[in-house]
Length: 316
Image (cartoon, rainbow, N blue to C red; front, top):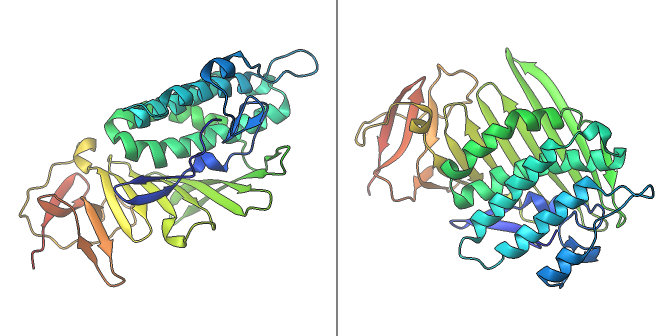
């Protein structure tokens, strides 16, 4: 794939780019891998003319064809005024095309790689694209693919893929119940040849989804995750900072009134009847307390079920 991007930023947040954690496949799949070349400098016309990977029996790789189309979409997006949106569209279209494939008819190695791609690009859309272009524009489209994505990655546990450069990706899945709450945790470990190991995971229970990524090559404070609550709240967490990207009113909860005074109580989200604390704007943590840094009329919401109240801004 054409892109060489390793991380993205949103309002000074540093977010790991999970797409950079994919090995290569065929002639077009993998970061910095296009037309069988590393960091190709070919023109769009030259890229378009280059073939995809063919198996010895004469079959063209369907996944490699999808990667080629994705590379061309990235090429056209580069430098455009709406680059972030075009890249998000390209990632969404790649995911949609992958989900249309019958993995059972693909060669085993290709089906394995495609499974990792589906998982990885779901992470990328949630952790990178969504904060960049806005929740309302992208999340509804991703949500429509959720059930299809879940079906494609059901068998990710125990999958292993290695490319020609010695990079290896392994999948895992774990399901359990804690205090009556059933959850599933799926993860991928990407070991780059001579360049360390990265991890990214998706946690899901009845009340929340967590999309997370971590790479030791960056300081620990740059590990990031996106939390999506069942009521529509979406928060970006990066080290000691959190930013709310969508608020509870998106999910039908009553909009809080600025000036209402309540005590914020962080909640686990395991019980919808317990108070839950939602960030509103940008906050910083100094090791003792969170302080407000954003431009909103109130600092945060506390919600119990569908009722919310606002914490007023603290002024010095």
